[in-house]
Length: 227
Length: 311
Image (cartoon, rainbow over all chains, first blue to last red; front, side, top):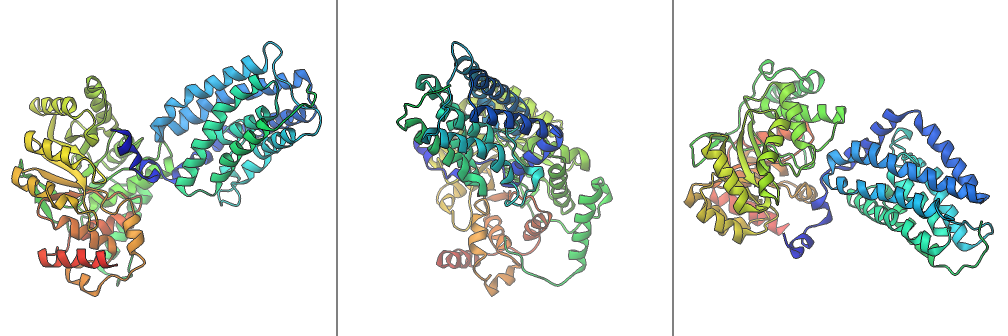
């Protein structure tokens, strides 16, 4: 099929599952993992603490925990739950594993990453993205009428994980290590946001907005000392 | 879809009881009382009669391993079979739809009743037979009744595979598919040259390009026609729901826009079967009922098309 024929399809023509089926994935995922959500939120709180009081060991801890989460989400959510209803996801799983490797290589080895200790626009935007991923994103299930059983929890599901990673990478330095960490989370957020928008879901905007905010933070002039 | 209230009749009551029974306990089909069946039309190449309305599975049956949604799909299939339905259509492209159908067939003990229509969908024709075998295992049927080359993907080699399977008795009918009105030139070319039993395409009261060449050619060549996207994935019925159903629709027993559209489609003499997809038992009942009442003649078909065009 040529490109012109692909472009002649509406986005909704290419979607192969309904919003209800997609939302039920999270309910079943949470049922199967409970009470791991509590552990995930606790580890998310630890990462937030390390972001607020940056130390070299804390930055490496964040990179390590995010790397573990990218592998876990790739296996437990993408492969086990999402791929059966969306065959394209099987091609995304290796990218999640690659992101975990990038986090280890760029965030932990040979000096790793630095995080800003003083107030700055990149730090503010990065923290806002992380806070959204940790607290607000799971709560978005409530106004959507899905209840907490449909909550998307950081570390267990892809969207908040990608947004949190964007937040960390948006404020980190040096730039040549931080930029590669943005690519896969940004791509995921664009795909996920577009999918949700096509499904008519209320939660389509946060992943798309997160990409924009991460880019603004990353491109913002900086010079603050980092830890 | 639009649903108009209608008086409680014995048939309505029976249909409702069947749906509840199917959703609640999913008994074998033999335990369900049969309702008046849909009208049939013969497969041109073999003379086998098939109901004019079948069941699609795009999106609606792609529910993964969700036990609640699997049972809802099984209830849809139970109603479909209880009303005399036979053809269910799927594809390896449709996510978990094939496994969902297999789940329903096993739960309903309906392997003998289903007319199993599936597709081959691979750009690597060497892997075609393995894909068909994986699909067959998902369905849990001994063999497919119909295998189609999905959207003409690698159609020459894949059609050769399917024709070889037919010659070996591994599938009864062979076809090709397209949708959204695309690639009609290619479809026409294949219809002229290949020994097809079926062609699957999009046709409805607003998507009528197939009337120009493909539907007449299908009659001329003795090829059955399966119609996909009868409601444009629900968008057509949603648009028409804002308009009142014309009073003269009652002449053909159409009680909703969905039945109006289906009757237009299946009244074309070249059409063998329309395959609306749904997750709702009441929609199955409505769709199947469209094939159980009188169909429009040519004059009324023109009136139906003119009416919708004017809305």
